[in-house]
Image (spheres, rainbow, N blue to C red):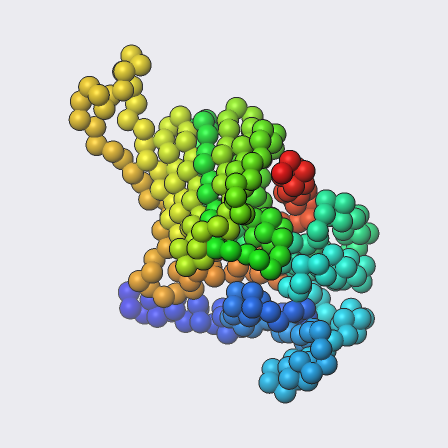
Length: 341
């Protein structure tokens, strides 16, 4: 048995050591989000970054000096004309994403772009049209779609949905458009999990809190989005009530299912006899064992979304869960929310 275990461990090591790529890549941007969430994953998978594109020549020179094997540049056109570049990863200022994605697709590059890929539904439709005439593909960085917690949710969610309640609460966000920069993630997740909708109402409380009611086919959803809480105790919770029981997802960390006790001739069994509640843990991040699968970058979906993009760029058989076309429903919801405020 010990030899079998050692052989398995050695195969796992060799799989990592033999990571190889057909093309080379460029990264646009070196801000706080990319440094903390994206670069660590790219470093882990040893993606060959040929270029890092920044705004200033001074920062480009620093990259040349301190990033071995990588060229710093503030000339995006040079990157686009380089035939070695298979994929371009874009994580710049949101206002620049539309033009950067458009140019990259026009040069037939595969594109990973952080949210938001563009600012309006009209710009999204333009990017979709450009992609149709490109040999490249675009994957939008909606990492929640790639989270193992969300994947488990989609696999286990059974029975008829009655309603859901979703709360996404953070601290103040004075530096941009909170709907496009922050709330796009929970709004996208709602469309991904529950599909088409009708916006029943949108109400804004004081400061930056938005309350939304959505009507789906046969069930209703209630959403609270707010930047009027705290970043240190930010909260994301999704409660889904079904005819079978109640699903609860907390902060992309845990997913549980509590079975309903049922009734007898319409009388609740828990009023007739003592009923033991049955709660099943469907997913839980293990904080004890510090391996990749228990890292927050993995459970939040960053690892899987970037691996999917790399696989697409390397012509692997991977489904794009967050294509530009997949974003249409999300932008429909964003547009309706903005119009109803």
